[in-house]
Image (cartoon, rainbow over all chains, first blue to last red; front, side):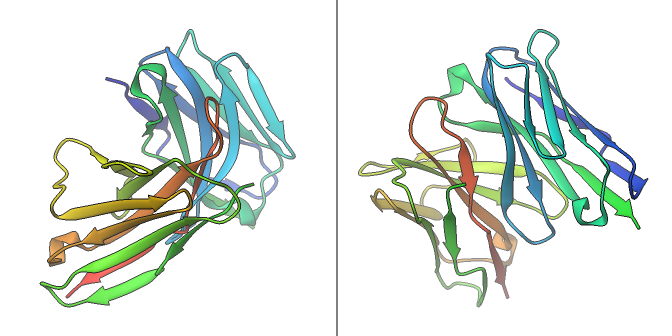
Length: 113
Length: 116
């Protein structure tokens, strides 16, 4: 059974500092991995989708890497801003589980002005 | 990105009543939609997979008679919480996938259900 872990569970940084969020998964036979952002009381906003054949994806200040062999993905957010404060969730789609996503517990980020 | 809309965003009901939540894909067709439940400060728990034109597939431990799912068209899935009780109070989120194969998942804004 696929298990997804995100460490740390919470992170507080001063504005301008780079953010590094970690996601690990136990089954390397994934179809893809997706990073999401969730604001309090809101749904999920898709940030980046990395296919199993890719090693990284970039969008603006966001960069996500994927190392399937070690079961890890890292989300980098450059030059953090207070507006980046949110919960960040990673989710993996396992080949053998159809379209289902398995979510990590999330990392709550607070960027202090 | 693609847009998934949920309605209502908030609903308060009395114990014993039924509540329907709608999930719509606004600019794409979704043969498959997913319903999640999220407790405070916890991650999402998949409840069921909704397939257009067929019965939903429920995850282990989810009561299919309690949480009725209907996927009548390629753009609409509904979740009905029947005979709601206070323990059903939660945040319910739907998602839909664009295309096939490597399609990206997009999520609705969620629906906060409070059962008094």
